[in-house]
Image 1 (cartoon, one colour):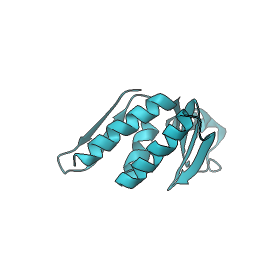
Image 2 (cartoon, rainbow, N blue to C red):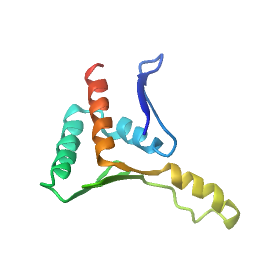
Image 3 (cartoon, rainbow, N blue to C red):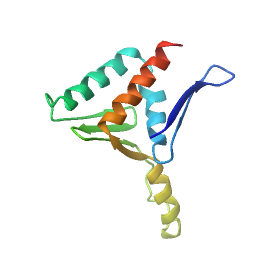
Length: 122
């Protein structure tokens, strides 16, 4: 998983993640700007890594995060598909793929550390 954290010309935080992991950037910008939120997730992830916790699941303003000893799954809330007909099914599948991701717990912890350092530098 590759990523960068920057600020644009207006000072807004920008994230860029490798294909398939974009939703992580959305989650970070929406829910993980406060240092205490970042610290809490890092502590929980390290508890999973050390196996003092078996799993963690929570919802954050339009996102659901699940972590266990090996992996992390993050999913954004998606729009209802009821108003779309079957001809749009393939397009909606691509949209759904951009709204969820999985990665290893080690990679997730490393990314959170980078995010934490970026936020602290602002």
